[in-house]
Length: 512
Ligand code: BES
Ligand code: MN
Ligand code: ZN
Image (cartoon, rainbow, N blue to C red; front, side, top):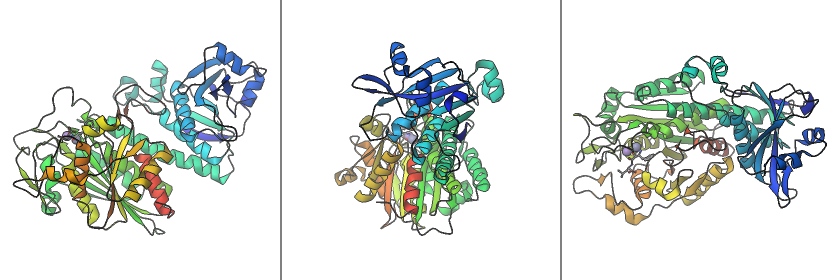
């Protein structure tokens, strides 16, 4: 993991492989962003003109490398685009800074040390740039020869080991607020990157038991209480949803409960994650072309896991319980069939009409389990429906809730941390599509509005009077395209930062 430091050094004397500066665009053309004054001065104030001659415009995502001016210890200047210059007196948008830092960190793969001379004028800016750097520098190569041999070997081989050290210039190393901001950035980003690793790990290596073992080890390290229910315990407890989904797999299901408690807490939150370590569809098998990326179907559980560990590392003054509903959805002679009826943990019966609508079944049991402890609010996170991807695309997740104010608060928290999200309704008329002739409810309803139908199904398993929100992250959980901003290809860690922010706001009594 990239090391973050705050530095008061001036750019010219800094020993580093590169100095990163920001550039933006305004009506007249390219402008050099604040923070890079010393660099511009060394080019005799002509840096903007030089960069324009090289074709730079200041657009978001743009990277231009040029030789450093004479007298600089660092050999290279990396100019990264921040997009439009903000209005006079307004600072750069936090997300623009985060993305630019991420783009630069990715462009610097293979480098040992880079100095970031971006517009940092307050502690929050340092946190945002730090997050962008740590998230953008991420790479997953555990299954490549370079990764197996470790980072030094990787660098020797192809120069592509992640950037080792980032010094943030303009930061105040002795200022408490600055220190806290980069410590927060490190805790959140490191756990988020761990969630990405879990999502990227192939499904033959990460089954429910293996995921539970990872959670147990991390819980031990961070003083989190952990409880794992295996098949025997799930059977004894009557968790028919989780057992039904896991019935076809040779790898048995698990329900993991992670409890972080603070002695100063007055509020409690429960986070519930869908953890299908592989979704083949089961007997309602997915066609080829729809299952190659289904190792990502545990991204909700990975996000919940990461958020609980981050809350513990930050010592947030709120109790947070994470529930990981882990199962592998496979077809076999022991698999649940379309037509089977499951008796859920809540006591309700569900007719399984499509075994590929499995996420709502494992979540139903975990939501009911979470409800028994009467938390102040529950948030579930799930790669739940293809319909939500059709509705919102691949970068925005949907937020549904049984309380409009809570839905708005969660949405606002998501926007604040730079995770695109959008509120979605739970229209009552869609409920009757799930009426079953045989059981209390069916696991499928109308095709149209499938993401909302899934949300309505989940709502039935939330305890009476408990505030609840549901995040359908099917779109942004896994990036099938090329990297952008601080988002890599593959697992993205989406929703981790929203959950951490909600926990922080709850601790401060500021939610809603
Ligand atoms: N895990 C899938 C949803 C999904 C699709 C996530 C694409 C990420 C990318 C989920 O279990 C599923 O199969 N949902 C079905 C539900 C349907 C059978 C009611 C779907 O969306 O097609
Ligand atoms: Mn499915
Ligand atoms: Zn699924």
